[in-house]
Image 1 (cartoon, rainbow, N blue to C red):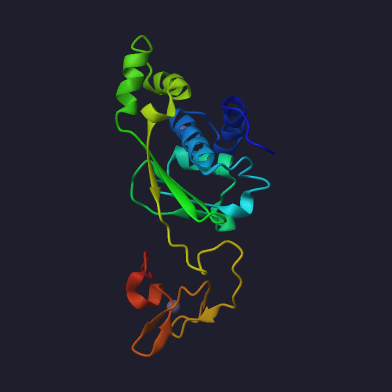
Image 2 (cartoon, rainbow, N blue to C red; image 1 turned 90 degrees about the vertical axis):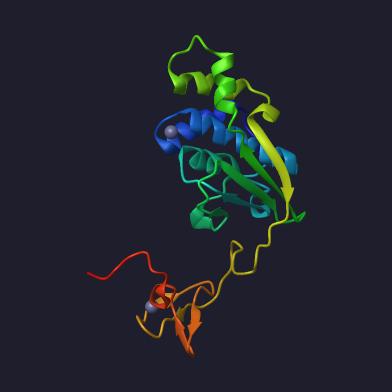
Length: 195
Ligand SMILES: [Zn+2]
Ligand SMILES: [Zn+2]
């Protein structure tokens, strides 16, 4: 399917995310802006193998970005970098170019100025974010993104066993510590503790 209209994406985003909100509208528009700057006409279909998206936040907008781009974590085409920023970088693997789109902090204030009569912030921002021209909503940077072979969608490689816990480690995520091959958890990067 080629690119849809914003209202059509809003329906899909509501289904995917469970509700529609200002963050979703912002995410949809961010992704639409990104793919259009890259010149991709069918990101979730014919062009799906060309696109990898890095998101810098895990909020409502992130799911909306998936709806437009078709990039999902489980396809290795969506990369999460937890920087806490309302931003995403859209990478065209075929043309080797990437564009980072950041929501401007001033967008909320702009929404207030556009629709001071709407009290509800979410409704105010939803309406404004649908209508604002991209240059008022976003800042844009053309950037270079190094995507290694182990980062690409479709990489296949046998898992390596961690010498400490015995669990399999995929995609070259094992590390060497004093001559031993370990998973990142056993190497001290764990996010959990054994009880
Ligand atoms: Zn939401
Ligand atoms: Zn281990």
